[in-house]
Image 1: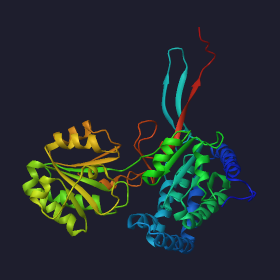
Image 2: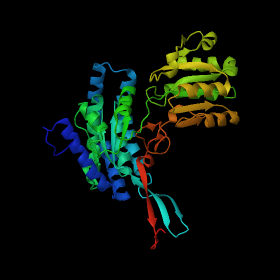
Image 3: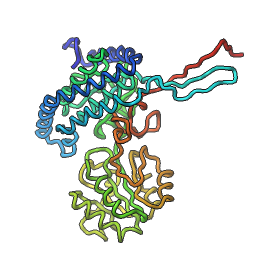
Image 4: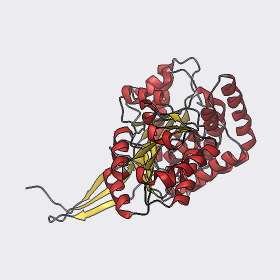
Length: 427
């Protein structure tokens, strides 16, 4: 809800006003106490709990519209809320409330020979813009993380989740007001007009400090191509699972099914399974039978098809496809050398996992693959800020500047230098 704004404003005027208000709110938040921010977050979580029925009712309207529009099963799964998922939203807000406040944290300090004492201190980024599709929980995660890190946030959700996002946003506003914080600290863009996105990409006349896109490939590509402010983003989650000859087969089977099938529509879902050619006689068929039994379609190279006939022959395009569905591409590789070569060629630098007992293999995998998240003997589905102890995340950043991996409260801060002296002058 945007309050006290003339409904006759054009989209550029509307967005400029939202940006102006966000900048004022950011100034207020930068000096808010940790206790005040924590109180707001706890009040938000309480409000989400109280409003569960209203949130589910709003979500049912979004789901009905999505089904009518022919949304895919993966997108509908991202959109859907039930009592358990709403409870998860409030639990994430409470987890964020319990995190250490990063603002004012002294990252490093040292003394110079001339007596100057220098501190590097965390500061909020300012105003964060989040553009997202389908996932209504992003409304809560982004709002809570930005508040904890002292940032104002402008949320632009997709039309597919508009009712759900509005219902969750009302709970966030209730928490802000209960703690005496400005309700402009978390604003939800009140129009689905795509021109609003264009205004955000232009930076709202200097009001916006960073943009975080969360959605499909076309949305993220547009943001990265057109944004005039810094972007934290990943274009795709083409995640790999490599099963080495030294892998424990029972472990590998459990992890493979979980990495692909726990939730196929999340960015940490494994899209390609690589199996050490030496282990193929013992490991390949059990792995593929488990995936088939779980309802997964398999697309394999010719060597895989020779050993397991019930697969579709993979094309070159399969190795660079983020399915976000119950489909996995499978390839035999020549040990860790072949796995590293394949991943470095096709990966989107999001998340990769190695299943191995040989620690030399693990070290090579970790040292020679440059993705944001690397796992040993664990499912790629752990690529999530909540699982990292961050409470939640706004997204997974695959770039190398400022933020990389899950974007939580620390990644939503910058820093400044505070230099203390006693009269020094430079010769």
